[in-house]
Length: 139
Picture 1 (spheres, rainbow, N blue to C red):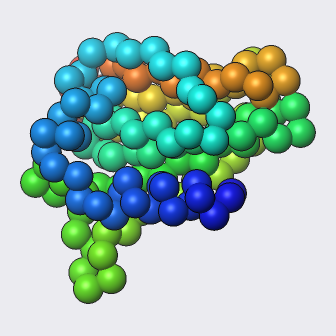
Picture 2: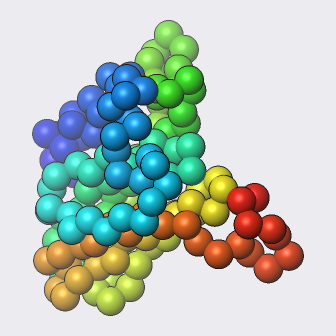
């Protein structure tokens, strides 16, 4: 990950964006959303009470995907004590035609689909079907 991308992701998570800004993020209102991602550009999302910042880079004919997750607290980013907000970073390669799915609370989900040769990636925010034996709206 380039230093600029690391700083951008940390800034998005660490700034404690206002509840209004988070409410306007894709996925915040619970509607289904499709987004064509731009390589090396952070994409902030709200999925089931989690704040997500993701980006991808073309890497060995695949999509090198990085996702930073953080908890929500009172409409902002979770407090991280004296060191500031914390997040969990996940990095993986997604091969073309395959996807990575993140399931959130209340059956919300984000799916990242890798396009041909890793040149393109789509983000899909949606409400998934309940797991067998679970009622809708509960995880």
